[in-house]
Image 1 (cartoon, one colour):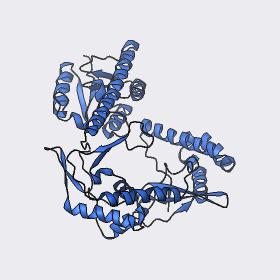
Image 2 (cartoon, one colour; image 1 turned 60 degrees about the vertical axis):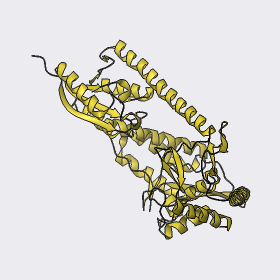
Image 3 (spheres, one colour; image 1 turned 90 degrees about the vertical axis):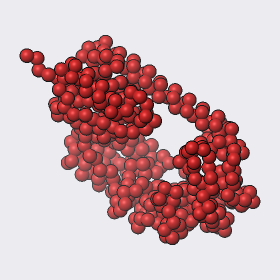
Image 4 (spheres, one colour; image 1 turned 135 degrees about the vertical axis):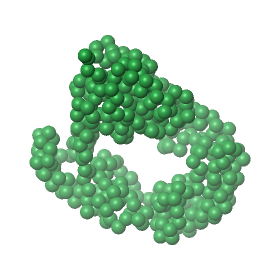
Length: 401
């Protein structure tokens, strides 16, 4: 008697697909269970990612759990409803097919009748993956063009609303929130009176004023309000720097909540402070900040670069300390490097697979230039990310006390 193939069923829906027929969790689960039963497969478990995009693997806990069960030998076959339920990235698809093959696990799709037990089947899967990725990118482009056209017609397209207004979904319009309107005017007044984004945010956090979504104020939040023309009844598209299709137009049926004079005074001050502000330098020199976290609150770290007597100084500080909600002190790049080299010295004793890379760098770190240090950090993080997916290791980031 042939042994039944132990199967793991993977199901995913993204937020925009929740209500779409054939893609709901219940519909996929029912169809795949019947399909497995018809093929005389034993179901080991269901792996369900609810409301999560398929653009990557790392953010989906159920995919990671599925890969872990495959590695342990608990599963001999993975069953999905459609290939794009598993991934929409060709890069991730190739990785997954190789992973399945390495641990002798078959891969089946109900709608596409895929068989990865031979070379033709694996090639067919990759071809489908290319079209799935094309579909995702094409959809994103169509959505972007749709938002652009709606904005050109004077419509506000951010359905989450913005501070000072409430969004009414049924009417698809903004109405003024009188309580928030007063605070928006206060923000502009404080800024015009000479307070920085940082000082305004810190003051509001000390006063226990909450944001639109109930969180803490950050300098970037204040900056976004000061620079948003919505408060004088205009809408904008393409707020990113150097975006060639950006524009500002009069809003359709949007009530202004600050005066034009106040807006112009704040805008002129923004331009003046840009000229007088701390000069910015290349982030290539502050190569640590994407990889480190605050040891006090777990928040992200930001660098600051200044020139004094023709010498560059780089310091790091917790972003939450700017908001006044973390007591972590700043630290210099020099201290950061000393701590990192100490970390490298201990790392070979924890993970021998990184030994050659770590040993060579820890001995020569002080002799490397900025570009070489940055390249090493990127390679180091890539190695950890691959290991995190493949072996499901929990890797702590470099932190400071």
